[in-house]
Structure formats: C-alpha cells, structure tokens
Image 1 (cartoon, one colour):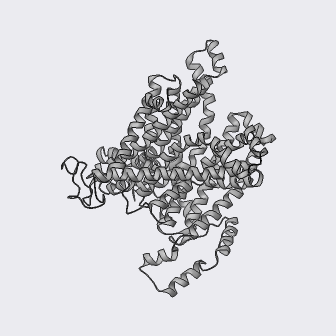
Image 2 (spheres, rainbow over the protein chains, first blue to last red; image 1 turned 135 degrees about the horizontal axis):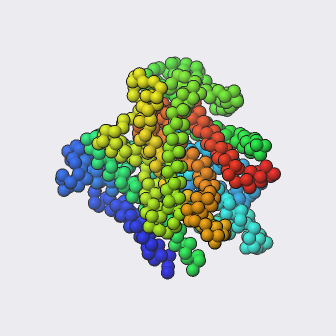
Length: 275
Length: 329
C-alpha cells in the first residue's frame, strides 16, 4: 500500500486528516465565507449563538462576529504553527549539521548554546522576545522558533554524527568535495527523516505557544487569534461562556489533528519499513 | 554515595558556562528593546521632563555603556546579587524568593498529580497492549495533550466555580480570612485545586503515553518472556518486571518536562490570579523591568538544572549501570 493510503486506512490517521482538512478549509475559505475584516463590528453586542442565522456563533462584547473570528483565527494558527516550525527546523538543522560535522571546539561551543536554550523554559524566552520586539505575527513566529530550535538541533547533530562515518561520505571526501558541500548535500538530507517526525510535534507546540502568547495579550493586536478571542471572552465568562469555549475547541481540534496525523504517519512508516 | 558526589560536581562545573550564555544572551536581548524601565516608569507616573529621565537613568546606572553594565551584572551575580527591580523598587532576589514558594507548590502538586495518575493509567493501558482499554486511554491522552492549559483552566472554572460553585475562582487564599494552621492550609488547597488540575492534566497525558510505550517495548523483551515461560501470574509480571523497568524512561521525562511546566505556570498563574513566579514574569514584561526579567530567566534555568540533577541522581539509584559509567568516565 502507498503511504497516503496506509495513513488513511488507520482510524487515527483518517480522523487526524479529517480534522486538519477541516481547519485548513476554514483557513483557506475564511475570506469567502466571512468576507471583510473579522475585527469589525458585525451586529449587536453579546448575541448568543444560533439566535441570528447571519451570525450563527453569536457576537462578542464589541459585536464582532465569532464565526468570522473562528475562521480567520484558523488562518493565524496555521500560519504561525507552520512558519515557526519550519524556521525552528531550519535553524536546528543548520546548527546541528555544523556541530556534528565540524566536531571538537565548534561542536562543544554550539552544544553549550543549545544547552542554554534548552534549560530556559521556552515560553519564558518567547515571552521575553515578544515583549522586546513587539507583538506582530512575524515576531511571534521568530519568538517561537527561537524557543524551539534546540531540540531539532540536538537530533540533527546525533544523526550527522552517525552518518558522517559512512562510506559514501568518505567517498565524497575522496573526490574532493568541499566540507560544507558534503555537510549540506550529502549528510543533511539523510539526517532529515527523524527530524521531520519531530517537526509535527513542533507545529503543535507552536500553535499552543502562539495561543498562550496572544491569550496574555502579547500577540499581534491587528490579527484575530484564537488565544486573543479566549482572552476577550474571559471578561464575560459568566454571562457568555461560549465566547471562550468556541475558539478553544478550534485550538484543540487543530492540535489534536496534528498529533493524530503524526502518530498515524509514524505507524504507517514503521509498518512500511517492515513489510 | 561517592558516585553521586562526582555526578553533582560534574554537573555544577558544566552548568557554569551554560548559565553564562543564558545571562549574556538575555542581557543582549533585553538591551535591544526599544525603551527602558525609566520610560515605562515615566509613562506610569504620568510623564516627566528630560532632566528627570536623565537623572533616573544615572541613578539606576542605565547611562553607562553596555559592556560595563554587563560586567557589573555578572560580577554582582557572583555575590548572588540579582540587581534592583525598577518597577517594584525592591531587590530582584527578594521578589523572586517571595514568589517562588507558591509556584513550587503549584508545580510540585501538578507534577505529583500528573506523574501518579498518568503512570497508573499508563500501566492500565500498557498491561494489555492493543486492547480496547488501551486504545481508548491512548486517544483520551492524546486529546488531553492537545488542550491548552489556560483554556482547560477556564473550562474548569466554568464548571466547578461558576456552575457548581464548589471551588473559588481565583487567588491563592481567601483575603484577610484570619485563618491559621490547618484551616489556612485547607483554604490554600481549595484555591490550588483548579490550577493544579489545569497544569497537571496536560502532563498526565504525557506520562500516560510514555509509560504505555515503554511497557509495550518491555513486553517484547526476553526477561518478560522468561517470566511468562516460568508461568508467573500476569499481575506479577506486570508489576514486578514490566512496570519496574518502564519507570526509567518516565523519570527522564520528569526532568524534561520541568522547563515546560515552569513556562506553563506563567499562563496558569495569570488565569487564576495567583501571585507566583510565573505572574512575576508577566509583570516584569509589562513593566519593561529588564533586571527582574533576567533574574527570572536565570532563576528558572537554575531550577531546571537542579531538577535534572535530581532526576539523574534518582536514575543512578534506579539503574546502577548509569552511575557506574558516569563515575568511571
């Protein structure tokens, strides 16, 4: 069986793909389903869900459409999650490859930096960075990448260390390839598969970190995020609990989708290797 | 005991350069911030002229060069002096020591909850790999792990404080309750129940999964096969052989998640208005209080190092092979 088919044949994989497809569809179609600025006033304040067919999920304290926020928030979550994970894996791969390939002093120095980034709680680091650089989508992405690159770096380094002794690397050396070319053309591509498995976990963690940052009011104030919607709804938790609950369900669905797919993908790959 | 001492000394030596990197990196990061604590102070005080700002900067040493301030800071660290918080007008060390116990109480309770219940459920799931019970628990754990802690906290407040009115909404104890001794401890416990659950439940899922995976691995090993061939009762194999061996990876995770939990407590303390270490971090960010923020980041790094050291010591006790190689290397 091909990999996508194996992925979809397991119940976890199918459920995960369905969840992610739903979130991705919401993110892609948001400008068509709910056109215009999702932060504009769309109706009376604190309208409960299902009261007005035009505003199926109701409105918040300022009369903003909750459904529009939910859809556009999916966009923010996915963009931040994917971009931050990509940046984190990229930084981690470069640092890990250099550390593993250069060896000795460079390795020692780089790994101490990796240690430093791993013992500082990632969320504190992201918090400090965003407070310094200001809340925009780009700084939030950089902050999350900065707080999560150490783990892929360590993993890539371990892979590189085991790969650099293989015969084809020795062969590349013999034909006179530049060490940097060997590192990034021969070794890194072969070190990547386990890192990509880790990347899924980083995407999920990035979505959660972004939500927590914007819940604390440190995200981009001009963009709808699920975290800021929850924070806004918290002010009227008694009177309108749906305002906090709805975006939270979106968050759980997105993160659970990523986890389910990565778990099923791991199983599918494992089975593929054995059969 | 000798082996443990060697481990401690080795860790202490290797921690110094790492902590130095943390200090320098944080210092440079906060230096890049537009505006300093004097700006934030003037803003909160309703403004002031340039002379006042310059005077305040000179008073706090903010007018000196970057390098000299960094060197002064590191030198002061050697004397365990973390500097002066401008937003609170108090020594940073006092502030941190004052806020830390609350957070340590929150974290240790959450760890105990997640480790205890998580590993127990992990045993339930892992004792019959592939069964319905196993699959249901695994999916449940995955779902729990996908829930953001702050949102779980809000949902718990909705259910247990707003609807059922069983537990208080926020705070660490009833203000001016005049309670002492056991009554006060009970009061604090009631206030901590929801935040501990919000923080602990997420990691419960982590421990469950690690325990389950480790048990599934160990079931396939020869010594378990030998135990089964001997005809030992299943219950005895599970508890005496499989669980005991599966505890090792669990202890490792205990160390790894300490940094995550410390970060998570920032948000949880904000949700429940608990005046702890995590909330202090948020207040430092709001007040642009660089000395306080560096102090907080440094303290949390030291905490994480200490937790991991403790984990390694436990590990050396549980698995004699580990400590032996560390000592001889």
